Amino acid sequence: MKVSMKKNGEILLILVFFLLLITVIAIFHHSKTEKSASSNLTPTKTHTNGSKTPQTGKSGSADGSNTQQGQAGTEQTKPDGRTIYLTFDDGPTKYTPQILSILNKDHARATFFMLKHNMDRYPNALQEMKNFGFGMGCHGVTHKLRLFYASPKSAKGEMTECSDTLKQYTGEQAQVIRVPYGSFPFLSPKERQALNGAGFSIWDWNIDSKDWATSDPKAVVKNIEMQLNRKPGFKTPVILMHDKKDTAAALPYIIEELKKKHYQFGVLSKQLAPVEFQHAKKPYTFKKT
Image 1: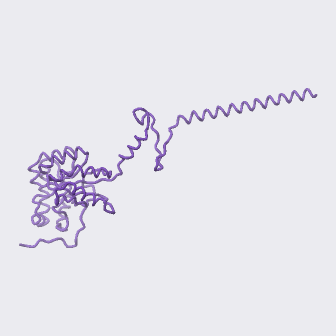
Image 2: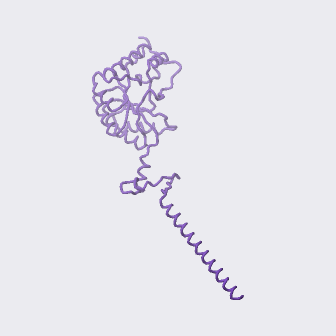
Image 3: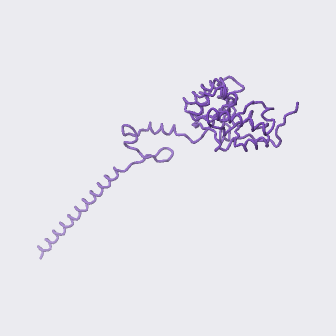
């Protein structure tokens, strides 16, 4: 009897041993499977701003690495969505090709508000603007206050004639215009109504480079910077410049500073809400002579 009990005890110990062995093997196999599966997943790396960016593996770079330097470069050059509008009045002139060359070299876009007689003098500049996708608008014919603002008919007539000239050389009519010296205080409600009724979108500006008052490129850049730094900022920053020699000299520095602030360069269009001056209840009236 004692021998039988002893034998049964040994069998029980053997069974327990085998159960423990099977359990250990199962745990080891499960652990190995999880490790293998996790190695096939794409890990993520958390940036300082809390967002997660997947590591791209072989598609991240030429050698299959995704370095900190590459990520930093992407962050620094990422645009912040702000768009600024460079505008040039009174052209085309003999300096327009230089201005266009600078803009193209720096991948910047702009809008030109031009005069009829200057378009007749420099038609090749118009074609170049069109080829490179710049904005082309009208600034009138005479650029004389008493003539342009004589009546709704005269204001509409000058812009229509200017637009027809643009179409003659480029096949495109002007949709955006800038009236001489801006819409305040000279443009009357009836003149505005006549221009809008003709399909024109009237644009003023909210940043004056004052290139008309100085020949110093550094002063022009400083004027723009000071106005851009005002609080609150502009929803649609539009810079007034002129198609002239000194502005062409200042333009590379202007573009450089705006790029440092991560601005993108846009073209004015009829689809945008125009920047307009605040209008007085009573418009300016010319004294009769």
